Image (cartoon, rainbow, N blue to C red; front, side, top):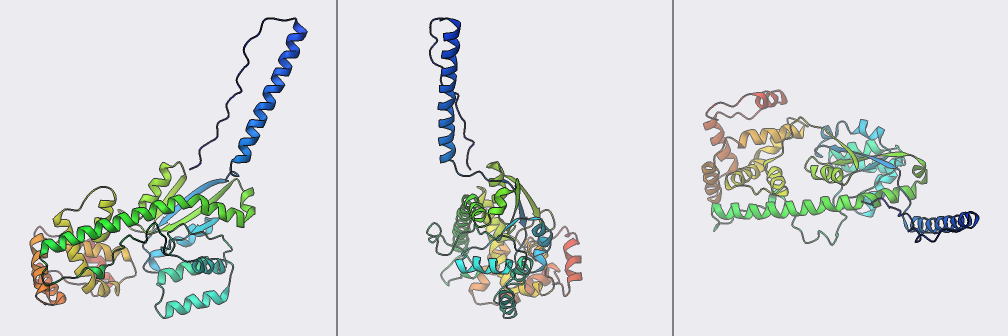
Length: 368
């Protein structure tokens, strides 16, 4: 943040003995002009050293999952009202920003290219929808996310679900300890990433103003920042820095995160997950690998998938998580283990989105 520059009044000269009126007036006028000149010179020199002032900036953060086209619903309306758009893109390259700019400028060849990438499942349907919203809008695009190979984060471990491997010599406490380290690493990496975004914001807007001087003439510009629901810290940090920032969530409230994301967020805000919570995060990993795809085939709403996972895993105890771990270590099928447990608990995997919706609103029994 840039602070306001304060200008001090020039020091008054020490009071002299009383002289004739005309001489006193002349001296006063000379002294006043001298003081004015000094003050002007000081202010002018400070203005020369101060960066060109920004127009007033209104920031709106659009929070959503970024997995499906459905998740990005609502972005169109926010985008139409914005002057500048900032997408979330970790590990971006200059070519990525060039692609966004070409799309914004209406380059049809690039639009065809990204559609072909989607046909080959090389980008998500969420990305394609975002690209189509940007296409031919002629709006400036900026990126404040961490670029590829940035030295500030290149040593951080960004955990992926498949990195959790069970070794024959492991016991359950080993897995829990390993997962706690993974959660901490992920949380620290994400916090560093969010701090980087905030530190880059003003510079990115300045670069846009240099490229599009017309915005310098506006009293106010609207900036739309699109982020995953995880990154609520960015909103709070910008608010604390005095920015005029609002936010919109494209999801059912209250927010429901996956068990993994919730564990990372808890550490983010100074709370370490207890063993029982980490045991359920472990089950969430196994559940995700075995059942997430079949549930995702039923709906494009990532919020429903997260709620389904939470509702299923909440019915398992620490002891059951440990039991499943031991059987997995012995080579038993995760799918068969879940089928057995689901049968014991009376859980039926939905076969349609209607059944999924009915399950999500259905109250849990006392035993569950």
